[in-house]
Image (cartoon, rainbow, N blue to C red; front, side, top):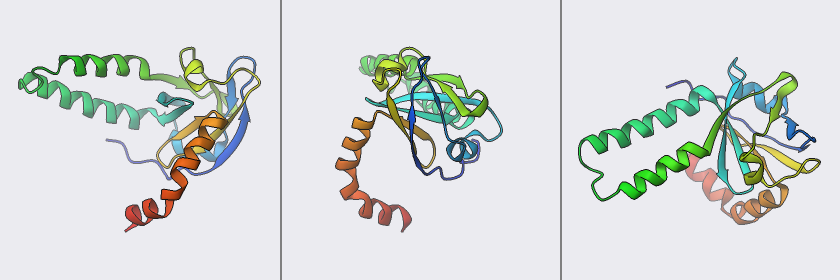
Length: 161
């Protein structure tokens, strides 16, 4: 498994252009990239997409898929075919390899645009999420913060203890 990238932190407002591109700040892309322009764009939750280092993402996916395959071979997935199919469907549509063009420009592909829910000319927030960066529709980001900010102190204390 590749090394964990540097902690990615920060929040930046950006605008989606008429071609569904946005400029991702170098403060967030530099620690994410690890010398490659290949990334994985993933649908995480409605109103948000995440951008991962391609090698790190693929390693995590490969580990999970291998575990499910080994359980299937061992007969431990009997009666769970619907769950396996659901996993396959979501894996098929959840992520896509993307390339950050010059100046950190990210093109949001079809299928991801609708999930993000931002039209050309609309604003987004690009947020560091420690191991990846995220692109949020502003309303969804505010809802997320309102719900999770009260838990911040306990989360920080638990993770840093």
